[in-house]
Image 1 (cartoon, one colour):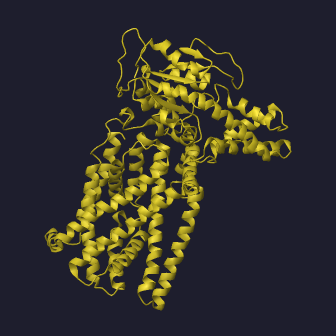
Image 2 (tube, helix red, strand yellow):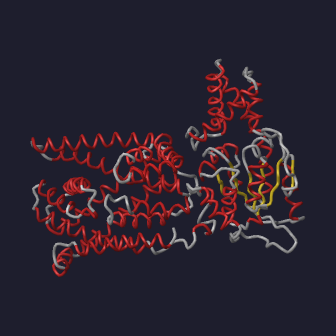
Image 3 (cartoon, one colour):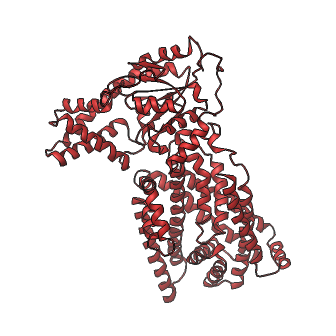
Length: 619
């Protein structure tokens, strides 16, 4: 994040500190007396939040990791952002107006805006969802422990109905996403409807992608969802320890069950008044009502709210201070070990992404050990390799391979109709989260072919979808044969070069490579479905260069598509080797552009030696 934006957030945090200092309903001498009265319990009240924030961070970090197999941001950086984000939320009405934009802007250079936004949105949903579940579980706890009067029964019934309704809507939101629905609602509200309409019109595609990532987590990342929920739900119960420590100052007659009920009622009451900055007054009232409802002195509630305010003040100060500590001086130029580019996302404004990457692509500092470039020589230390059509089909366009599968399975359609269905399936897969991160190549092929055959059935008639398995099996065996051959080449190359894969794929590249036993050869994977940029945009190749941590002049890109692989990687400043094979449609190309042309991937080691000279160790 740029320093000027970070400074704006810091000003918000400082404003919160000033407001809190001015909002205590007692003079500071009396306040100090009350803090001294707390004694060592006060340190327990403040210290327990170290662990509460750890659970919050674990929940959020679990969601971040689900967004991509490799996570170029450490747990402790997320911990820092969690503390600062919550500090900012205290300062703004509605809470989410400060901390969440800050978190997104800090993570965007590392994860990309789409992935950063979706992780923050998912975490906010999880944070609120666990609050609702906590309130509902507290209703059940109250019924189990206390006798319920008619009045209390009515109140508990209302709370339960509200919680069940909220849980229903949250689960529905997880299934289909909530971002687009939220903007649809904002477009109906006075004062902001014009802004919301214009923003949605400009960013519709990105907002829909964020929603698709949310729904993918719920539908295909069940273990991630449950793990994140458990961390965050655990944090709800750990906050009750704060109440326990405070009440221990005042009376020995307190149990943890009462503290759970006090915290549940207080947080419910204060969240009803979410529009109040720092929930001034709402939390105090909630404490007083909660302890009174459990036949404790109302003064206990006042004292508890006072100590809680002081604790909040301390952690806001810590959060604001952390905003200036440990920041990347220039995230876009940071070391590859800190910012693995295979999970960097494109900014929604692709022009901005290209501009930032163009500024960094040619000035990256080499971080790998190896030979230095000498005058008059080309020193290649890193390779960027395409996958589809290059590694898995020997230079043949996959449309040609799948068409062979159709013919082998005797699917009675013309090649023209097949090609139209092929294009339809490619666009459908790009727009819908059909492919799961754990899908291997056979599963992917089966899904893709079924989409093609269903489209052909709808447009041409017939009943051919039962042929999908046969077509997929033919293509899968073809790919397995090619990858066995390629693995020998990669085994040879990985001893001499650092290798990163750059591919237009569906988000399951890691699973595909594991299936074929090729994952060990690549240090990083830059996958279009993950980073949000597709070839032939040179930005995706610059991400690959950054993942290598080498100057572009010491990197060679190799692929089968002339425009998507050769021209675009050349624009990114890389040397290029074209695997010339069967194209989608034969075209004339400027064959002087690539540094070398090969017709079989087994020729790649020799072609590289031809560029660099007879080196025995180019790594």
